[in-house]
Length: 299
Figure (spheres, rainbow, N blue to C red):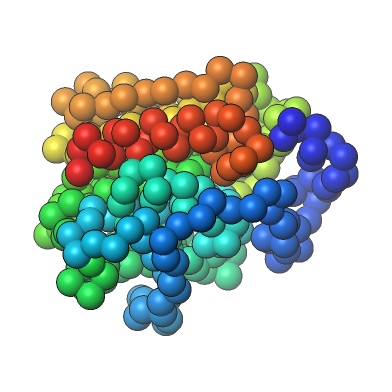
């Protein structure tokens, strides 16, 4: 369904576009179904390392001590907003019975690496520092994100462990990009064309986010290269027809080898981006429910 819709839209290849045009095409897509209802959403502007930073807070029910899930959206570090992932965040908050905080971090190429990482780290610390105002329990914090957002979530988990917290209790990574040097794996080659996210598009994203290839070996860019011992329980969602399939699988194996309780769920027959197709793809709701159950068990 997703592939057919993309064909009918006749969208140009990302690699033929400049980042601003590509961003407009992606971000201006309108939802095909009504977003799930939720008790409350509110947008706040908080101080960030590069200026004002917008976050959106999803509250599924009145509470003074709810767990919180920091969510970092996908979009190849070049596009995506809190609006493009609104439906998924609403459903995740409802299913996990947790406050979800979605972060509108800075995008490349205007703000290349490590701007997005800096923003996500800063937002996580701000949320915990303001736990009483937000009605959350600062001891029950998870990180999550899809694709580029999964990359950022994994980095934030490592950073919080290594730099004085706050402690992260769980991480939920949806087809994460964990090694930005890994663009010639079997899944990158096998799924290089035909499934919306292409190998060339991933290279395009990576080039805009990390114009200096040396950065791609740094743990704050590619969390696969970081120390994995002592990280929180993790669930990783992957898709069969995704260039990033091996990226997620390899990271799950490395986490397990490091002693981290890790659950790997591959969605057969699915492609990159299925997670955000709430109301259109049954596996989207199933993945969110799996993640919610995992978070409930670990928060």
